[in-house]
Image (cartoon, rainbow, N blue to C red; front, side, top):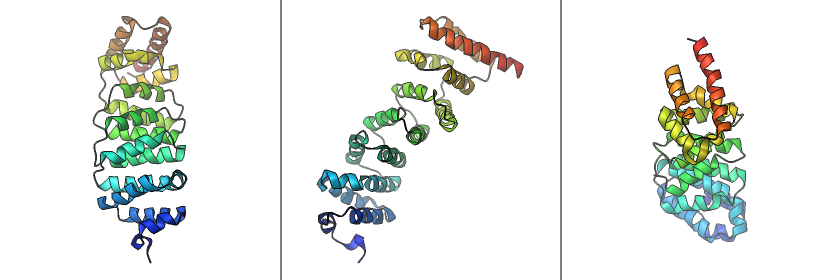
Length: 244
């Protein structure tokens, strides 16, 4: 008899994580919204030890259902609550699941905060998947930019490119960029490498670069950080002139 035809209560009582995982994988093959009730049953009634053994598969199935159907707030709150209690493999699956869910459901404020915080993760795949979600969102709060600026300090080329695409899609003009850097002293986050990445992403003309320089010169930024930015701007400007 196929596992899907078995009584879910019997599967739970078996105390066998392999049976539960097999049941969940069967659900993923037919990701109907009605199957969410089975996920909720497992979330609410499995003991913590058993839940930890199957939650990776459960989150994967939630993403498969959410890819094709709208998801209730209950499930968004569920993944938000377990994210920081999970290992990096589960965290990465959660971020990928949020990406799938975002295609059919509106993400609540907590989930947007979670995505922004995921950019601080030590695991590059999590950062990369979080950036993919941001790339597909129409808007997100200014507070997320603090962590985007942190990501610019990365040495991972793929992550830097993804970060650049997010910034470009955000349509940040010179004044807006300066304002975001000034907020909460975000300009202190960027190391020289990150400043160079930011300049390369945003400035294709000397006119706009000079406008940005002017904003910094007139700013109340701490002098040492102001000097770091102006030094990188001078270098980048020479490159622009040379390539004219």
